[in-house]
Length: 404
Length: 160
Ligand SMILES: [Zn+2]
Ligand SMILES: [Zn+2]
Ligand SMILES: [Zn+2]
Image (cartoon, rainbow over all chains, first blue to last red; front, side, top):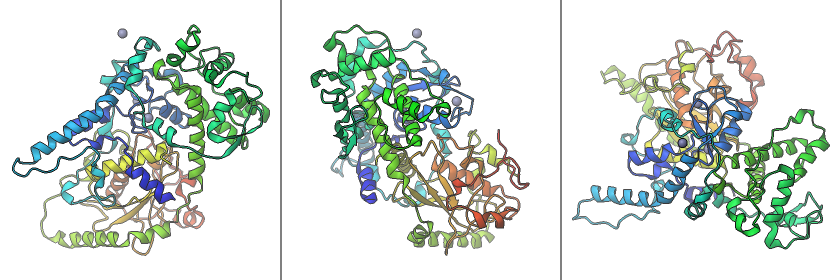
């Protein structure tokens, strides 16, 4: 089962800078990716140091460590500045990326293949990952990689697009919507993930199929929800959210014409809670106030609420037109909980693995010994000793270099 | 199970496959997104000339927000390097794996850091508290709270 999942993931198309055949395009693709998750920025926020991350990624990080992951300058949520200009770049890049990828591959093919040996042109689905996944091919291919510094964000480039004014994009909403169908890989996952199990509705205590809990809670059969036709559930949810948050409850672009309600300003961020001072009932009430499940123990509740606050607030760091509906966010939260459960019970036995790649390792040991024996003969010094390659990297090596 | 951590690891694997590992480091095994193995040797002049070590990375679903669990594999064909920050059970006391971890770091970056930790070693010796530590050590080195603050005389990581 695990193997199948891994194989599925290996075969699935996960866009990545290494898709591109040339370094300049790889660089371009890398420069619009978050250095935490490696995805194209999702709700990019810029910190006061100028470094930029997906809102959710940096929110997750500062819970653990209130500092910039790139330069370690202290930071907090109050510093975050949204970055709608970069968001537009990302949206445009998502649209043209497949074309650019194909064109660049075709160009490389043309250059590398003389006309007298015409070969079937590569289709874009033939990826470099056909290569062996275990051991990097020949030594000629090995390049000294200077760690993460090569993917560092150019501060000067991004700091110019700092924008403190939120969400003034509604005029472009139609265009932008068309431009990003399901190109967000995370969205795709949400759509394909279909758990089939019953959960208890936190509102009416009925047992409902897992994937329809949202529909249920917003629908007429859930007792505490008003009996509105399902078709209008979004505006219904909107009303609920307005009550709780005093803001617009659902995705604006979709709802505006439908319910005709005036747009009453951006939704407000959920404040973080000090769980330590809250009794169990208060924590539960927090969850219920957001229509979240109250299954599990106190620890689970807190984790769930904490995650919800992050997902919810990060969503508000997007341009309004890109914001997801609360239903989508709930689905995201559930997926996150599943992932967590799925990974918890994986305990690896080092001994089992140790035997698996015995032969390859043995060969390397022998090679190393040989090279030591051959050392008597004068050989040119290695092109780059590891300690010299990374002078420009301020995070990784300084602490270790000063060990002795 | 295409979680953020798996996707991120998959991207790192892509990069390794496309550009190769840093010099002296080879990917031995990455069949899944829980455990990866690398071989690591120090190139050039060092106390570890002619020695190859095996590194094991273990990831949980919170990678890269949380650091991977990294250790040298001690088994029939591989030993932990003799180094003031490496215990004989393969556990490593390196701040980058603890409080100096940052989610923008990568598996490659960790390998290179450990490589340079070995390269800069002046004396091959075990940590002074090796025997005591190894006797009670948990399976997962991340469950150990290593002191990077010089509590033990041999551990003098410079925390900036
Ligand atoms: Zn990110
Ligand atoms: Zn920074
Ligand atoms: Zn302006």
